[in-house]
Length: 288
View 1: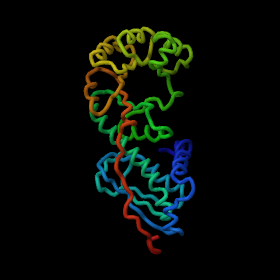
View 2: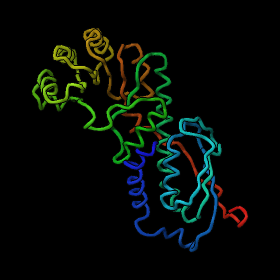
View 3: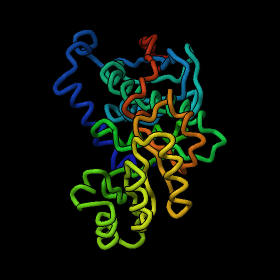
View 4: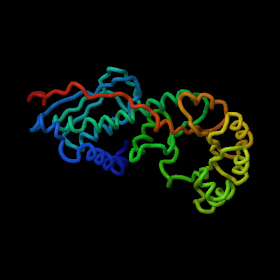
C-alpha cells in the first residue's frame, strides 16, 4: 500500500483500532513488563494460503513505537505454508505484546480475503470474465479488504458511492422505472461516467438496453434467463452478473457469456487465514 494511501487512509484507521483495543493502558503487559525491554517474536503461518497486509501488520507496531523493526521473509501475494516463518518483529516487548492482536486481526482478515479470492479467481481462469468485489465490506475496513481482493487476483468494483453510478432496485423504484432511472442518471452524471443498472428479469433488461445503459447487471436471475439476457443485449452494453455468488457455485457462470461476475462473498464470507506470533523472548545486550 503506497505512501499516499497510508497517509490518507490507513494510519487513522489503525490508530482507531488500537484505541479500541487499548483505550487506557495494557494492564496485562504492564503487570509483567513494567519497564522497556528489547525482544523479538516470530510471525508464523498456521494454514496454507495467500498472505496480504504485511505493511499494515508492520505499521501497527511502528505507530506504537517508530523504533520497532519488522523483517519479512515473504511479500503480499505469496503462497505460504502451514508452519512457515513469515517474519520477525524486534522491539520493546511492551509494544510487541500490546500491538499483537490488532496487527494480527488485520493480517489474518486480509490474508483470508486474498486466499478466498485466489480460489474463486482460479475457477474463472481462461474464461475472460473479470471477478469483482462489492461494497459488502466491514465498516471502516474497506480500503484493507478491497486491497486484499486485488492481492488475491480479483478486481475492485466501485470503492464507494461517489465513484460511479449503479442504479439498484430501490433506485429504480424511487425513479419510477428502469428507463426513467437511466434517463435521470444521464442528465445528472458527467458524461464521462458510465451508468450501470441492475435488472431482475428480461423485460427490465430490454428496457435498460433501449434506455442506453452502459453496463447491465443481471441480478439473481436464473441461468437460462441470464443467457437470454446476454443474447438480448447483444454487445450493446457490458454485462455483469451478481447475486449470492460463492466459490461453491461460481463455475456455473463460466459459459453464460457475461463480462463481469461480482461476489460479495469475497469480503463478507472469507474466513481468516490462521496466523500467529510465537516464540517471544527478550534479547540480551549483544543481540539488541
